[in-house]
Image (cartoon, rainbow, N blue to C red; front, top):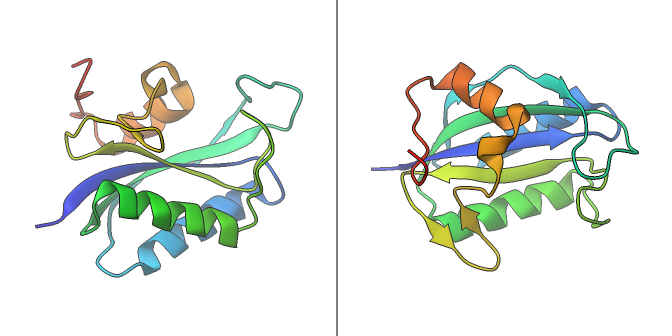
Amino acid sequence: MGHIAYIGIGSNIGDKVQQCEKATTEILKVDHHKLLAKSSLFKTNPIGYTSQDWFVNGVIKIETDLEPLPLLNVLKAIESQLGRTKTFQWGPRAIDLDILLFDDKEIQMEELQIPHPLFHERQFVLIPLAEIDRSLIHPVLK
């Protein structure tokens, strides 16, 4: 049986909508990834570093056979493929892919934290999550 993962998708460089759509397509090209739900895309203001262009954000819910770290590696490879380069925290990015939730797991590692930290405080994550799964409960905060 597959795992359920919620992935946050965002972009604020170039054709933001196209970048988000392309990222979703690339995620679904991975063997055994099945799209279960896809939110609308939302235009949002930047957080942290605010002297940059607005973002487009959304969330997808997938079924995957991958464990969390291999899934993270796949997402990082897709980010690189789509032109993401390291800048600075909260800086502009062609694409940003984050594992928000993975089953009901809690993972605290240097390279991966699930649930994604602070997502419960970010409307650009909460609104798309609520759109695709109103029954979702934060596994830590309940």
